Image 1: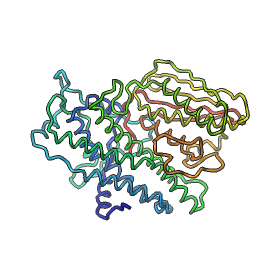
Image 2 (image 1 turned 30 degrees about the vertical axis):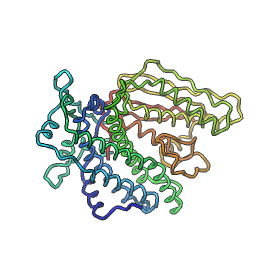
Image 3 (image 1 turned 180 degrees about the vertical axis):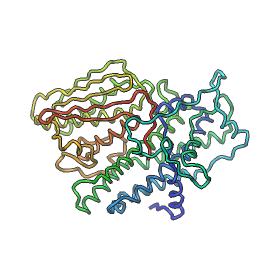
Image 4 (image 1 turned 60 degrees about the vertical axis):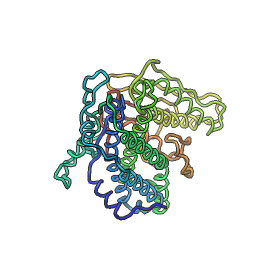
Length: 442
């Protein structure tokens, strides 16, 4: 069983004193548009400094939780995963480069026609995040590090947002390092697959031991920060692995895991089908409640299809469950749930309207609380259930809505809920189509 040494924990504390650097969706697309060996090496360099900072913050957070939560076996297990991943990244041997190669890596690249590549657009403030809610280098408070630089200035210097020259021969050591770095990231991604359920298991252990019914606002805001950070880490890792693979095979509409022409209607139809299937399976229905989709066929925008699919699936699953439980599983016909997609200049908004009886006004804040669920008996957590990022049972953990809201806010969108008790609920999913807002970091 791997355990961190005291020396490693000291290094982690040092890294945790730096703020993370926020990246926007648009920057990731502009940077990764033509990934040459040099550009990927710049990205590897950026991530080999950025990921340890993000992982170090999480190790510290997990060790400083209130009321004995840090002592729970599952929380300690997750803390060790983060520390081990930190160690693997900082210990990965780097190639020794000549001064000439170093200079070339620092020069902005040239396009295939010889013209200089554009410097990437700046990330803007994320509209869905309150000032000071997350600490990142765009709003860092300027703490000074040991070299006399402010932490924000040090973070800004780590930016990978300038593609390197694509038309030149790079030494084989760079390609070798890129491949090793990508393999290390794949290993880390697999290790962290079941973080969400393992932390949930830790909360259950704590609730049983302390005989708590609900979690308090301190733990709630820790979970928000922790899961938002996990989305960011997985986004950067997934994007880098996909860019490394795309140096061999390029998909016309994909830059890494970001689709520049995400078709909203196709993803909505797939989420509807999946949610209805899970509903039929869970309740033993011959046919799940019908869902009507109102959406233009050619509505495309830049987004991560996996994130959109997850948010729609989770919200639809909640709606279908409410409809079946309100009207009884023995009904032949259920009221139709509607999904309406509207396109504005700033946002694409998806409204999901059900007739599932609604939620009392006093219970609406609880909907956003982790581990709050209207299911009588929370199912026991199988650590393997979370192996694929977005697979989920019909109900029971109270994680669907809070985590979907984090996915929406990560790229500057939001998830809101309006309910009519006795009738039904409207869920509004706002997706920021400008793609320029910085990821919220802690």
